Length: 156
Image (cartoon, rainbow, N blue to C red; front, top):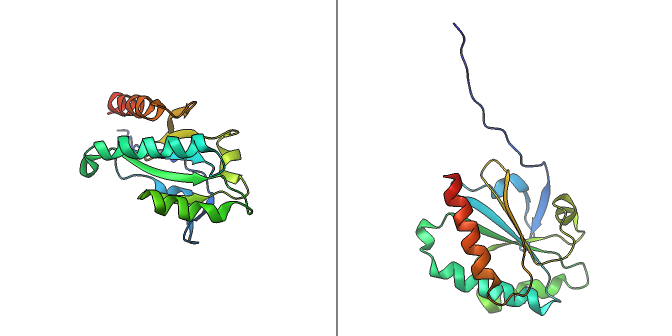
């Protein structure tokens, strides 16, 4: 008699990241209990990035956040010179999401992000399920967020 046991494969890399508040976490700590985590790569120096985040926040707020299948984490690609702008922009806009500071671009290299803004969504095992290069900001956030929700619904 053979016994078959299934184990979920873990795709999360062993990667440490630093949050905006200075805490260091493992990338796998962002794995959602259900749904997906959406890493939003952005920079403060680009008005298109800020517009995209403002629109994403509006779209995100329209959903029932208690039943939200998407956990959003901002990944700032600002370097040492511009990183001080991140906290004021996040707090001024009231964005309630966690923020990773990728000052050396380690996470961007890991996920092949060259030019922000880009979105990459992962399931709880760390498998990439959605990727999008947000182009103009105007209305793109709503369109891509709807595509992400559609993708999540397909996998459930």
